[in-house]
Amino acid sequence: MAKAALERDAMVVLVDDSVEADRSLLVDGVEVPLRRPAVLAEEHFDCIARSPGVSVYREELGAAMAAGCVVTSATAMWLEDFADRRVIGVTGTKGKTTTAWLTMKALEACGLQVRLGGNMGTPLTALYSSEGDGGGSGQSGRGSSSSVYVVEVSSFQAADVTVSPSVGVLTLLAPDHLDWHGNYERYVHDKLNLFDHRRGMPLAVSSAGGDAARNTAHHPGRHLYGGEGRVTLRGASVMVDGSELLDLDRLELPLRGEHNRTNLCGALTVCMIETGDLPSPDSLEKAIKEMPVLSSRLETVGVVGRIEFVNDALASNPAGTVAALRTFAGRPIGLIVGGHDRGVDLAPLLREIESMRPAPVVVNLPELGERLRAELIASRSRVRCVGEPTVREAVFRANELLGDEGVVLFSPAAPTPVVEGSYVQRGAAFNAAVDALAGRAS
Image 1 (cartoon, helix red, strand yellow):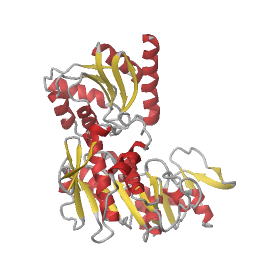
Image 2 (tube, rainbow, N blue to C red; image 1 turned 90 degrees about the vertical axis):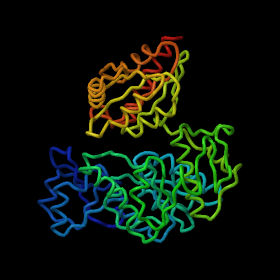
Image 3 (cartoon, rainbow, N blue to C red; image 1 turned 180 degrees about the horizontal axis):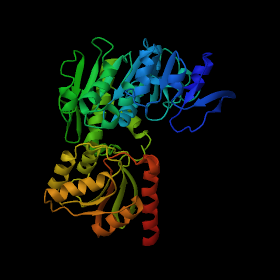
């Protein structure tokens, strides 16, 4: 963001909560002041561009706005600059990244030039340039008006946008990030803000789960998908207007779990909105098979004996873990769960755990895992739940408890504690533990 601002001849100051003393950083060879948050009250700024992790509800930002400063974000600015382009904005509690990738692949199978960016990795500021690979198909001309842009947008990024994309996608709504937004109602409001600034825009909405459909019932351009709508899921078959388009089991496409197959329905709904047509089954199958393996999302990282080890470290809330458990229904499961406790309701996850046959064994990690264990005990559950302090020890314990066969599933239902880094580091710890077990077995 600093680089983009410098390229536009702005005077830039970087502000960071962790800065203990004022200093400077080099940004493309330019020395830029790095200051503590107190500078926001001490000096006047025309514009503050916040990082997504910085809540729009912070007191310093409210005071700056009251003083006449514009508070925005890279996402909001990019959407303003690309207001007349073909932009597909994808948001939701879970499924955003997979749906964005599938949408890109489906549109490419229709012959369109597609650029992918946003919350999943390639920052939107990079999409201003006409050089590089664009994070998508690798074609040049990233800034071309002929491109279709597929952008993943988090609730943090959606909260203060003032321009909506030309087409929207809402995958799922469930409680998450309540510490940032304050409560679930505000979380939903901030998510849906992405779609509030273009009258009658087409909006593809998952009918799975209920909250997404309920909260968009008023939207005049809504297109449901999954359980209802033109593109639906019937078992392993993707149906379009009642006729089978793809048999996902027969084609063995890399879409694990009903939730990911529903995400494909969303991508195809976008295709129909954007092009009025669908790719051929053969071209769609080829495009999906070219998708990269999305790490830490139901990713099988090893098999030791007859036990499969699945890294789902990005499941940062109970809804993601419920979807992961359903993916392996009917198999013995050793569930590793826990992380930073944001106070999200655990009732849906508890119900899922209790209903499973065979009953899973649960290995709980601090902090959320300890609350889950306490709630299991309070409900007099017969599900076995044991605690371990680290991911590595949890992997060893889950492997031991499963015995001869099953799935060790690391699906934490909570974000990574700050002291452990990010889901990437946590997933790496899981993978390393699996490697250690494989070494012992050999």
